[in-house]
Image (cartoon, rainbow, N blue to C red; front, side, top):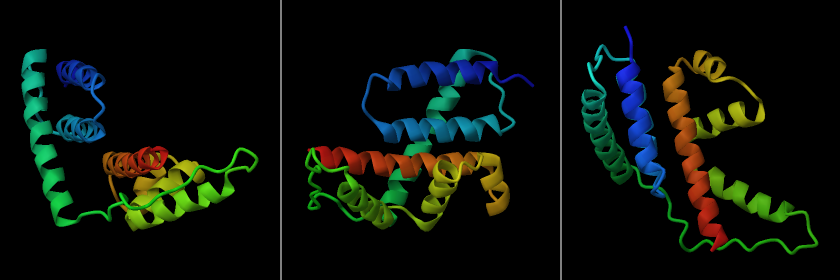
Length: 157
């Protein structure tokens, strides 16, 4: 069974998102694509694939929004991290950001991030040891990185 039309639709929609600065939409698109890839749906045209992927992405965004409302993260608006002076190695700033990450990420996200980025374990190894699918591991890692990225943006201001 070929998923070429779904892949083409994904590329077109992802191309449109690259012009915007929205990581949440990109995460929702990636989640929807993974979900559709594993499903029995096989679009007959790229247009059909776009429609299917758009609806799935929209539904995923709603789910993410609802989840965020149910389980809000602690706001970092009032937290201020100063940049290290040029004569230091940035160790203090690193420790401050590490503390913020410890407060923001879920235990599962911290474990996946540590095992993948620090211990160099593959998605497959992590998925097998945690009893999860690889797509779920990728999604959790993507969300964790999004939180880190947003935290970093706020500290640069």
